[in-house]
Amino acid sequence: MNEENNLISQMRAVTLSREYGSGGGEIGARLAQRLGWQLIDHEVVVQVAHALGVSEEEAEAHDERTESLTSRLLRNMNLFEPAALVATPLPTATDPDVYREALRRVVEEAAAARHVVIVGRGAQFILANSRDVLHVRVVAPLDLRIAYVMRREALDRAAALARIQLKDRDRTRYLQAEYHQPSDNPHLYDLVVNTGILALENIVDLIYQALEYKAKRLQTPTEELGPAAGLTPYPGRPGDFRPPESITGPSK
Image (cartoon, rainbow, N blue to C red; front, side, top):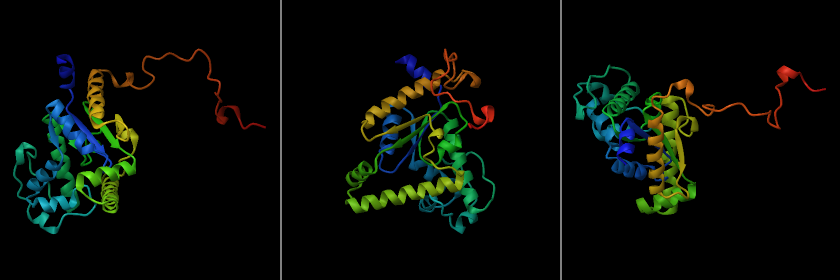
């Protein structure tokens, strides 16, 4: 166990993207508790609000949505240093640019401080090029997400479905507008997990193992990574092998 912990301690962060109602937030909380790492979730909104000198409600209005902050944001650029996460002033810009820069800085500086689990907030894009960060996506069938929201938020089925649709739409539009990619692109993630059958605690176990596996490969040169690493050619051509027409020409 100590060897596992030493390996995992080389990783800086886990980013956790989730479909609403998939249990991703709960998984993030359980993972952070198991690792002894800091959970960064709604706290990011609070830190950005502090950095911008606006109310938490105003930052909340922009969080994971495409709507811009109000013009008051630009009138309150006297920044201070909340919890050492935003250490330097941000440049003056248009309101969505200011929010984006503040959020980016909070996420990057939280990860730089090491050992955080970041739920949502586009962290999978912001930290995409960091090899010492594990990126996870949590999904679930719609009916099961409805059941989760009904139970957790004490809503009837129609209200739960409407809330899921609203949250998913807001997140999709926000990430598409900010990063020009859909969040459900599997190539953004090291691990995509479905809570439809696997229990939340099972998935925490999988993420823990994935952290260990990725940590073991931190020192491996990039050119030695990938599915071809260590493999030799097939002994013969696969039975379904067909050379491209650019080589053979069209069949008669």
